[in-house]
Length: 97
Image 1 (cartoon, one colour):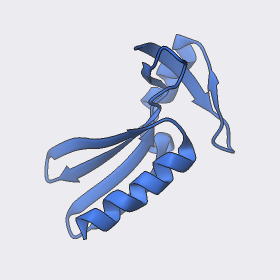
Image 2 (cartoon, rainbow, N blue to C red):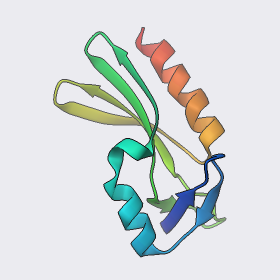
Image 3 (cartoon, rainbow, N blue to C red):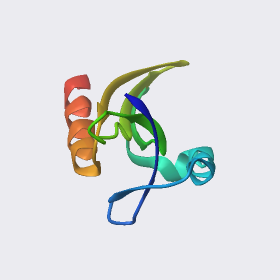
Image 4 (cartoon, helix red, strand yellow):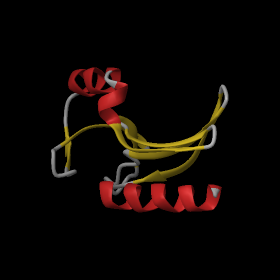
């Protein structure tokens, strides 16, 4: 695996970009959140990662779902595309209920 840099269109399509643009996109945390659910003090958040690991075949791990309880956060899943990330977010929410 290697480090990859991506931007995402309004339609959720990933496109390689330069490191400088990816760093500026990383700085805007709120804009990167693609799904968020609050479950009685537990937050499930799924976000786009402009700087991410990319497999040798070019597949990026550009989304991740995190569970936040109190001050502790744990990454529970990573995804390669927006549709997979939204589906995975919903599954993690169901698993937490």
